[in-house]
Structures are given as C-alpha cells and as structure tokens.
Image (cartoon, rainbow over all chains, first blue to last red; front, side):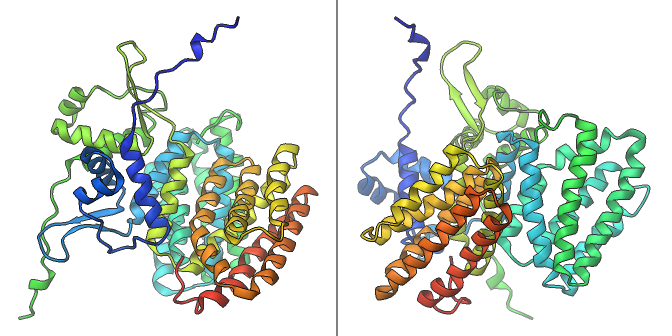
Length: 253
Length: 253
C-alpha cells in the first residue's frame, strides 16, 4: 500500500466572506449594481445571503480596499455604502503586484510589453495633439542630460513610456500598459546599475531610439511608431537585459 | 466673492491600514519580500510601522483577500503568514470588475480585445500542439449545433477565445486577454438576445469566422491567425453589437 499520509493537508477555514464577495460581484457583472447605486444595508445583506454579520463586514471591507465600494457618511438619501468607479491606480497597483509575485518568465513580460506598447504607440500617433506630445517630450529632454543619475534616467524612461500609453486616449489599454511597464522598473534599474562602463553606450542607444519613437508619433506615422516601439522593447531586452542578467531562461521579471 | 462653500467636502477618515498596505507592497516590489517568505509577526509590524494593531490586521486581511498573503497554521518553522503567488483567477476577477465598473467606452474595450487577441492568436499559432488545439476545437464543435441556446453559444464563444489565449503559453498575456474577454460576456449575451430573427444569420457568420481562425492556428500560420482574430473582433462589434445597441458613442462595455 502506498503511503498517502503526506498528501493530507488541513481543511482550509471556511471563508464565508468570500462567498459574500462573489454574490456582490455577480450583481455588478450582471449590471444590476452600477456606479453610484447604494448597496443594501448590512443587516439586510445578512438576511438576504444567510450569513453572519462578521462575514458581510469583512467582504465590504475588502471591496472598499479595492475601490469597489465607498462609504458616504450622514443620514440623507446620499448616505450609505455606494458602488464606486474603481480608480485606475488601484488596478495598476494590483497588476504590478501580481506581475512582481507571479514570477512570470521575463520573456512573457517582454512579449506583453511589445504587444501593448506597440498598440499604444499606434494609437498615440493617430491622436497627435499639443498637450499629449509635450508630456511625451518632457522626459525625453530630461534623459538627454549626460549627468543624469541612472535611477533618474530609469524614472524618466518609465515616464516616457507611460506618457505614450496615456496619449493614445484609451484608458483600458493605458492601464494595462502602465502596469506592465511599471512592473519591470526595478529589474531595469538593476540592469542599469550592473552595466559599469557600458552605461554611456547603452544610454546613447536608448536616447536615439526614444527620439525616433517620438518623431514618428509627432509625425502621426502610426506604422513607424508601432514598429519602432516594438523593436525598442524587444531589442533592449535581447541585447542589454540578457547581457547583464544572463540566461533568459533563468531570468525572471 | 465667489461662493466656495459647495467645494468643501468632509475630510476622509484616516485610513492607516492603507499606509500599512503601501509599506508591504513597497517591500514586494523592491524584491525584499518574495513568494514563500514569511511576514514579520503582527506585533513586530505594529512596532516597525508605528501603527495600531487594528490597522495591521485590516491590511493583512485585504492582502489575504487579494491572494498576496496566505496563513499557515501551526507552530513549526513553516507556520505564520507567508507571501503567496497571487492566483491568476484573482487578477482576472479584479480586472473584470474594474472593466465592468470603470465604464470604459465600448470602443476602448474593442481596441484592447483586438490588440490582445491578435497577439494571443499569433502566439498560439506558433505553438501548435495536440492538447492546446483540442481545447480550442472543443467549443467550436459545440457551437456548430444549430439547436444550441444563445446563452450557451455565448459561453462556448467565450471558452473558444479563452482557449486561444491560453494555448499561446504566455500566462500574463492570457490573464489580460481572458479578463477583457470575460468583461464583455454580459454585453454579448444582451446583443445575442436582442437579435430576434437575425440570430441564425449572425450565428452562421460567427461559426464561419471561428472555424477560419481555428484552421489558421492549426496550420501554424501566425499572420493569418492574428489578422483573422482582429477582423473578427472588430467586425463583430462594428456590424453586430452596434446594430443592436445603437450609437457607439453612447454604448458602454
């Protein structure tokens, strides 16, 4: 007889609040609860769902932390717990955390960056406008300073890619692009700091590629902007990140 | 003097637990806390961060709900609160909720779907393999049944697109693709149900497009697979969703 004792694990504590969470989410996804709608009061949820008050409270707290619910104080018709539009910041924060923890292979993150940033650059090129262009140009100019420390170079590099994502005017695409770009921020800083004397050569290459991307967007050339960003992302990881971090198979995001 | 009274709003209650959340997240993003690492005990966090025990508990509860922390019972070296790899399901659930609540314009969602599903189909075509192909083919065959109710047609339609995303072997891309596809599930069902007599014609078109996409992936033709999926997503929303829901400017995801 095989020894199956090792396969036994303790039964997880019952997590009633997760069932409450699921019920509220169902109502939102079905369109029955919309932004601004009031949630039934706590005691009513307790009755409707047949669970403890503690479970309801815990579920509400989680949804509040996620930005799904907002409490309005007072006693008027506007008071109570209402459905809120989740702030984009909450989503990008969670995506960032997920990417940091899920330990996706670097190749997967590069592929996602190439896909999203290519599409974002194409959208940005189609919407050439004064203010959007300025916010892309600003970090570009700052990165031209040869005395800029590597950490700040990395910050402006991130800002440049984020500005392109936001200039496209598609918030959903921008949220995902920004989250994935921000997730590699620490890795890129490690790479920059590990470059030693090679830094100047690498910085010069990055500056040149950034300027070319900017020019294509400013000219409204979507094809060129998309191709250049994709080549920039893939080339940087292939030639520079792997040079510093070594074997791509073992490198994690 | 202008009446500025209306601009005054109550100061939000202090949210100490959010500061605790931010501190823990910083440690994760900096790579100081990795999957499997143990978090300092509650009383130590209270001292380290100079906050109340209640604030620490609340923050831990939120991170547990997000799947960032997992509690291990017992007293051995393996017990305590450890950093967990967030399950993909948690991320896609939150993305889905975010898309449902953020009320992104339908055009933005279509653009994101076209971008992600094009890239996913290209990856899938590059990895033609028995098991992956079978999971794409299965919902395709089920949708061929002319007696299939519209709700189930929609479920298999979702399953078809999810299987393509997962066959590409890139979990990060798959997570985002699945979340965006799932977010439009309810909208598509509303559209299917609103079609009346047009349903048979629309279902026939979708079946034909799905089969063509499957054939391109099975043949390993990444260019064709990507083009066909993108045309399928954009065409369906342009010709069919807008026919039922009307003016794209007012249609929301």
